[in-house]
Length: 427
Ligand code: ACO
Image 1 (cartoon, rainbow, N blue to C red):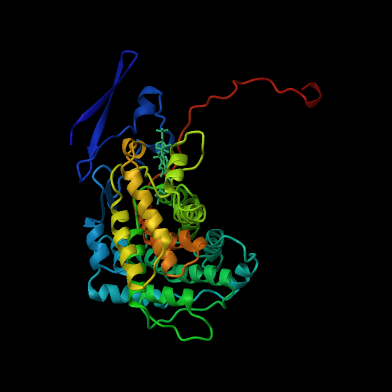
Image 2: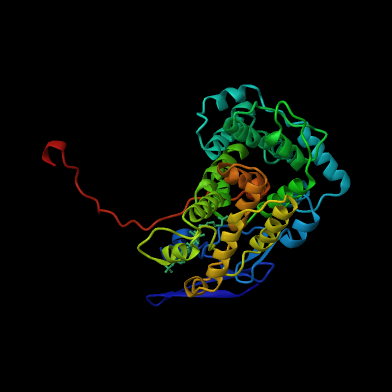
């Protein structure tokens, strides 16, 4: 495309190419801006800044559309399983039966975690938040798998990816088992990927593991819905850490820390704690709506609003239906679900929320399902990380294969001008 955008400043004109994405999104390529004009752009929070061209995930926040590699999230959630989606995100195409079987087999053969890792886990107090534990253990994996990946070798890249997809669920399960005081266990290679994760998390030492299809299906769906979301805070973290050529495991460990915050993945824990607090306070949703709108009160309606979606988050729509189904199927009558639905209704009809285009996001209902599945609240963000792992890997791989330059934003300095040093006794 030959379109150009012109910037005019103090009589000088600068031209920049406009690039167009496959869904007709337009972007001004300002690569030459500083060289030509001496100026930079500033955009705190990167609200208008694209960091890369990517072929992995498309989302249209105005229309509420999300797709992975061209497949709609609705279709994938209904028809695919999590491992297929992981393969799709990472390698670009849905696997055929043979490719999928090999992928799963390769993952199984790497699913042991060095026994020494248990000593690292032992060093954490039981009260430690499992996100901190998971990030540390993922980082520690580097020490046990020290070979750095030669990215020019597809085989080395594949091996590192398979190793991480194999060992990460064990770390997730260990983080939860430590919290619950359960012995650390390994998986069962005869089971499906998600079923195995469920077993590793919940198997009691003195009881047979019983498969529950409803639970496994719900978990599978939740993981698919969280699997990628283009250049969000944690994914951008993974890409920027990886851009310094830090390894895959180190980059993912950084992504886990970024996800932890309550404005990002930590919102699912925050939503449930908020709903529980509202229930304990008598269930008065109006009171909390008023708090959320009061600018002198730091309280925000957790699970509402999104940096990119200014329409319904399509994942929230699917999860809301799934929450209803799972609770019905499991015969759970959870008052928290009623409070959530009440809050949603009030917010959707409230001028403050309507004007700011604040809709429920993916985290608003996911915690209710996790709770129904018996997953402790502090583990919710860990479950998000488990789902997001294929997306982080796909984004890291894409960034490395394109040999993108190191991520290094600039700034506008607004501090003191150069001044002479003053000795301590004269200050
Ligand atoms: N409750 C009340 N008011 C809100 C909320 C909320 N949840 N979210 C945004 N607003 C208001 C802001 O106060 C602001 O109002 P103003 O224009 O009068 O100043 C306006 O809406 C715009 O909000 P920003 O914070 O500027 O929007 P931004 O895009 O920076 O933030 C975010 C998006 C962080 C998700 C925000 O909506 C939020 O904090 N939501 C609650 C936390 C949450 O659910 N996070 C999960 C996001 S999904 C994910 O990461 C997986």
